[in-house]
Length: 322
Image (cartoon, rainbow, N blue to C red; front, side, top):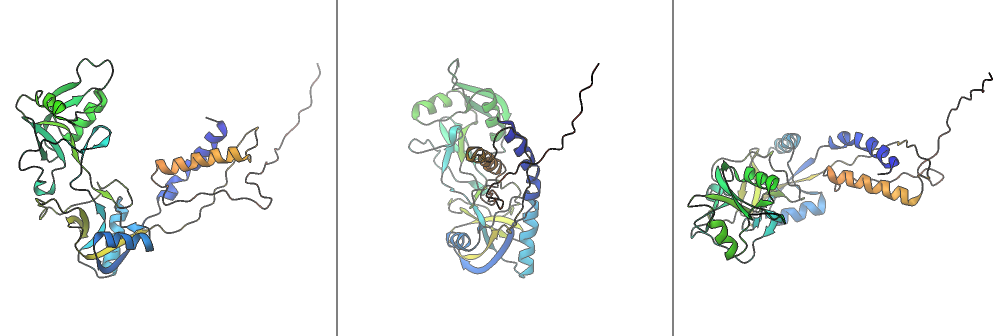
């Protein structure tokens, strides 16, 4: 990497905590709409339906509700494609082959997001269950493609283990693969790579761990509760066609000017160099999940250039003679 870019990015990265401290501003829209209509309204007039992924967000959205004396249910940007199942390996969507047990998937208590296999049949279950698992080894030198792990693990722990030691949890994309995996479990419940499409936000933010959910009334046998709302500070799920008020959000607009000093023997105003630095800045924003909320541009000075060369203070020391 060019040393000029390293110096610049170190300085740029140093201001990221200041940018990250900007909180979302929430707006309660007290009009009853379906989730998709609420989403369209927020995207047209603000940024999106409300995302809540920090503790400050939790506090601020509640402040907006209290300020409007609002104590009912309201849509937020939470949703899932509830009937979409994936394989852990490469997030491959299940398309053709399935081998579900007759009553599954039923999403009992609204908490069955992972799949296990038993006697060749698939079952949905809470991901926190402790089960054996089957890993897949896709490496060229693998002596066995499917490995039974007898230690009891949660689905996510099993996934992590398989990815560290082998390739991933095993996929059963056809009857042959399903038969091989079924032959590994010897009549016990075994995790494999089956998982439900997870909850996510309308703005495609993926962190939902900050949410606290209602403990009751979460049964979803019909699997048609694919959208999330907030009630009393807690999240719950409902049919997306239901109508209710909703929260939108946007980030307050702020302008921040950075003065950057770089040392280089080359022309830092060269368009190719500026473009390279700019690309690194944008990648930094992507890495910090800020690319959609922050716009960066060069500030040209009165003479049309970005960087000016500073004069160096040089003290000349005369040569001594012996």
